[in-house]
Amino acid sequence: MPLDPPEPIRSSRRGLLGLLAAPALLTLPSSLRAQGMPEWLAEVKTEWAMFRGRFVTREGRVLDSAKGDETHTEGQGFGMLFAAEAGDIVTYDKILDWTRRYLRHSRDNLHAWRYRGDSVEPVADRNNATDGDIMIAWALMRGADLFSRPALAREAALICRDILTHCTREVAGKLVLLPAMQGFEKRDHVVLNPSYYVFPALLDFEKVVPGPQWRRLVADGMEICCRNARFGRWNLPADWIEFYREPSFQPRMAASWPTRFSWDAVRVPLYLAWSRQSDNPALRACVEFWHAPGQRTLPAWADLRSNAVAPYAGHAGVQAVAQLARATQDRGRRIQELPRVAQATDYYGAALIMLSRLAWQESRAGAPIV
Image (tube, rainbow, N blue to C red; front, side, top):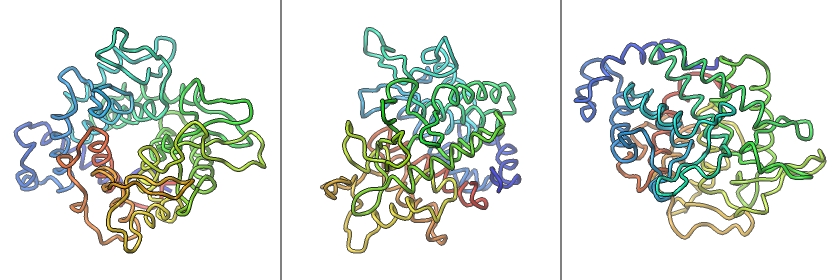
């Protein structure tokens, strides 16, 4: 199966970078379309301008507005990815330079997961977050392609190799993805976060670090996190799970975290949709939960032990993922149904909207990539 959208889509994007470089066009998608730019690409550029204006500093820090303007590697990777897709090479370089300067480890090619600008020691915890490193590496690969800078692909390869070395383990005959280098390996089990499996990115990594390990990591991750580890009335993926070293033990919801399908696990259907996994049972379960007959609002979360749902609706980012997931079952839906970044109340909601828009376009470009 192809790992990428068909070549005409990617080459047409690269050929449009001259148009993308014009800041005056950021708020004029109709003008961009008049100059030959596809509507979806004009939308990406417009939405990126809104995201950048709200959450990216002049120095290249992406701010998590709901967490005291902390910066995380996840956000830095998201920002680079969005900037690359919008052709914003200036902001892309600023985010990358800031990330290298303040978060890159000195002993390897991974990154400290959090930066607190108002602390005496802004980077107090040098542990990494594997999803953040995955996003940074993926954004480097996108930048290498879209900006014709092969050195970025070589930098991505270094990160990918260290992800394999430091953040994957053989457990009960499966290759699993640890959430970080340290802190998630217990005597009889490992703790996993299903949303850290960025399936389309992991498969793309085969291009810069060839080998069977990426497809195995994806296949085992889908089996563990999207087929076996589903819980509650709706059979949903959980934010955090325990995967046991004894092969006969079934995965369980992690004891040290809320037993919910919520802010982490919402990315599971996002990445499944991006990978064109329309028949995946976890994706179908999410669609059924979010769009159950008679449900007046789209719940922000579900407790998978008690089967209680949030007494309030999910924000615009959750709504975007829910619409994306539903579109995998109904091909007649249009990207215009997705929320806009302007509707997001915080950084994470805005990021989910941007990711959903990219996934919407790429998930419709061909056959399943797994």
